[in-house]
Image: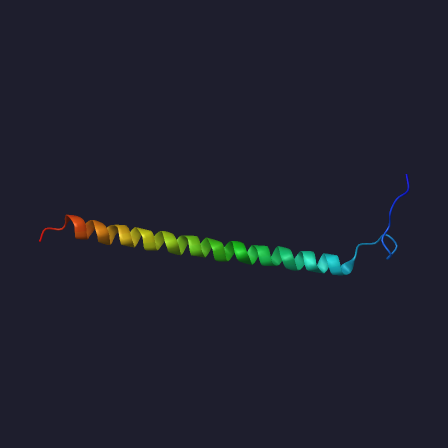
Length: 60
């Protein structure tokens, strides 16, 4: 079987490595942003639940 090599002589393509590092960094940033959004949404749901609970069961 014949091995296929790229035009740079079989070495790693620097543009591909750089773009992969950028993509991994972007994924990490997206994970952090998603986590903070999830935490913020959870806090809003809890506050809304407590306020609704007070409104429904508070004596007039």
